[in-house]
Structures are given as structure tokens and as C-alpha cells.
Image (tube, rainbow, N blue to C red):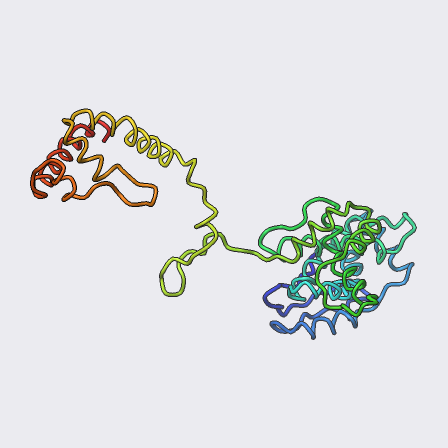
Length: 318
């Protein structure tokens, strides 16, 4: 036995049950007509206590699926009513009803008529549990509440927050952040820590962020947080490259400079390695030419030859 409300479309089907319900079959309306579905379930007759007890015992003792159908369909209006309370989470009403129907069928399967309670009271827990689970899984891409305390906060924080705004004496009904007094009051009412209230408020105020958006509409890669969240400093290749650069800048340069004569060493040092306090470099070609009594072109030739010898010495670090 199954009563299902498909989230994308409502198929046309007829669910018939045993006499005296045979003449009261539930005909699901055409595709997508949620209002007609709600109207249909609201016309289903309610069971008296004796009828409910009898059907529940037939299901429990004899696995009577017709009795299960009577119990389920007589409470479909309860699912619609409960699902309507969760429309503020932005999820489709049909999907909420679908999940609530699953909870109702679970409740009917586990219902014990000898416990002294009506099915409507017993089923409310199962219906809400299924709807809660659906909301937690689909409200955001990242699940916001995992522990029991977090789930309680998730489903109570917004309603309590709206209550605080309605009772505000300072007229600041548009303030989004809870005050310390409001946080303390809510923590006491829900029996959680104030820090947990603050944390859930922060989670609810945020939104989903795609770390790696991928290609955009124009085919180009879109920029996402992954571009600046990635830490390449401990990536193995980057670590090896950094170690090689450090070795090249210390041992390698020292070894290459030791291969040069004194004049070539000074020319290379002045032209490439020296940095003054003001950010300027060392001596120019003309200044070095005047010091050694040669032309600037000759200094340049000595520099080129020295650099070639240094590259050969640094080949061992390649």
C-alpha cells in the first residue's frame, strides 16, 4: 500500500479501499494540480475511535492492507496541515507533503491501538520527523544541523527571533542580529548554550558558496573561492621547488661566484647582486669602466663572459 505525491508532478491514479470505503476512493488530480489534491484529501471521511481501533488491530494482527489504507487516507489532511507550517523554508509544498506522507505511513505501520492514544497524536511526530529531515537535506547544499541541539535550534531560531522582533519596545523590528539578552533568553528556553545560538544564527544568515564554479556561460572559467583558499605552500612539488630555489640562491650562487676572477666577480656583484638602502642597484657600466680604465663595452663583454661561466657552474642544480 502506498500513498505518494510526486514532487514534480501529480499522476492521475485511483486508490480504492475496502467497504464501506469502496465508494470513497481517492482520485489524485491531473499533473501538477496540487490544489485539487488538497481538496480531495480534505473530503476524505474521518474515522471514529472504534473504526480506527478496529482498522489498527486488523493491520497489526492480520497485516490487512485495506485497513492500512483507511488509516492513511483518513489522515492525509493532517499531513497537508503540518506541511503548510514549513512553507517558510522556501521548499515546494508538494515535496513537503510527499515527505509527510512517508512519515504518516511509517506511523501507521508502527501504531499500537492498545497504547491508549489516537493515531493523529502518534503520527504527528513521524510526519514532522520526515519533513524535518527533508528540509535539513535540501534547504542548503551544506547540512546546517547534525546534532539534536542544532536541529532544535534550526527549527526554533527563526520563529523565536520573529517573536522577539514583534515584542521589541525600541521599535527596531528590522534588526537582524540577536542581542545578548535575546540570545540568553533563547538559550534558556531551548536548554542549549548561548554560543550554540550564536553559531546557528551565523549559519542561517549565510548562504551556499560554490568553491569551484567551473566554466561560465561564455566558456571561460569562473572565479571562485577555491582560487584563494587553496594552500600551495605545503604541496609536495611546491616544497621541492622552494628548496631548490633556496639552494640555488645560497650554495649555487656562492659556487658560481667562486669560479670567477676578482674583477669579473666584482662586476657581476655590482651589476646583479648589490641593492642599496634606497632600492637602487650597484654601479653602472660607465662607472665600472672608469674605475678599471676600460670602455663600457669592454665591461659589458666581461659581464657576459662571467654570466656564461656562472650558468655552466649552476648546471649541477638544474
